[in-house]
Image (cartoon, rainbow, N blue to C red; front, side):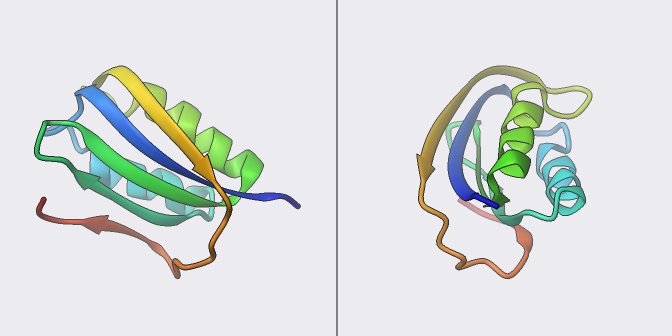
Length: 94
């Protein structure tokens, strides 16, 4: 099973709509590791690690987001799986 890692920058109306909590729930359901946080410019940043096909599902989910979100752009940066994360967490603060 191929593993992957992606760093996302999600733009649009994505703060104040439970994007982080919904992303964490989705990541748990796909058994992914990493983190999600709000960025100071109003975007949301996330890193997902796990089986490549599950990471790709997470990217597709982030293109739409939870109800109430209006995603206008998702920037993807793929890299090698590092295995550095033990769980998927919400990071607070900028």
